[in-house]
Image 1 (tube, rainbow, N blue to C red):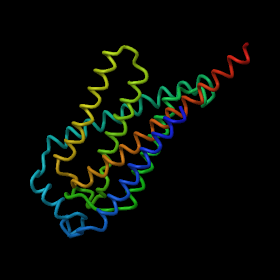
Image 2 (image 1 turned 180 degrees about the horizontal axis):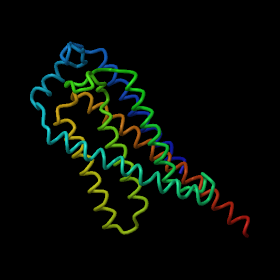
Image 3 (image 1 turned 120 degrees about the vertical axis):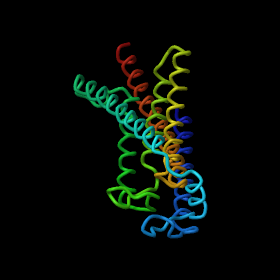
Length: 231
C-alpha cells in the first residue's frame, strides 16, 4: 500500500512539474498580441495557426457544455451520497473512503479554478458578453477530465462484474475524450489552454488515486484493530 501511495504521489508531482514548466512557456515564450483587443498570448505562432485552422463550431461548444453539466451532476450525486453517510453516522471517518477521496479532489479542483481566475495567464480567443475572460488552463476541460477520470477510478474499484465494469469505464473514457475534443473544436480556447488542462488533470487524477490508497489504508488499519479487539 505504501508503495502504491508513493507511486501515485510521484506521478502526480511529475505531471504537476510538467504543468508548471508548460505554464511558464505559455507565459514567457513567443508572446504576441494575437487575442481580442490585442490581448497577449504565449506560444502565439502555434496557437494562432491551430485556431485559424479549426475556426469556431457552435455544435462542439454545445456538446462540451452538456458534458460539463453532466460532470456537475456527477459531483452532486457523490456529494449527496457522502452527506447521507455523514448524517447517518455523524462521523466523517465513517464516510466511504472513495467518496472522501472524490470530495477532496473536487475541492482542490475548485480551488485551482479560482486561482486561475485571479492569476490570468492569457485570455480567450473570443469575446462574449462578459468581455475578456481568463482562458488558461481550460477550466471546462479540467472539470471534464478530473470528474470523469476519477469516476473511472471509482468504477474500477466498485463495480464487481468484469464486463459491466469494462463497458462503464469505456463509456466514461469516450465521454471524457469527446468533451475535450469538443472544447478544442469549439474555438473558445487556445490549443495551449487545453493542453495545459490535460497535463494538470492527469496530475489531479494521480493525486486522487493516492488519496484512495491513503483512505483505504486507514480503513484497513481500523478493520484489523477491530478484529484484534474482538478476539
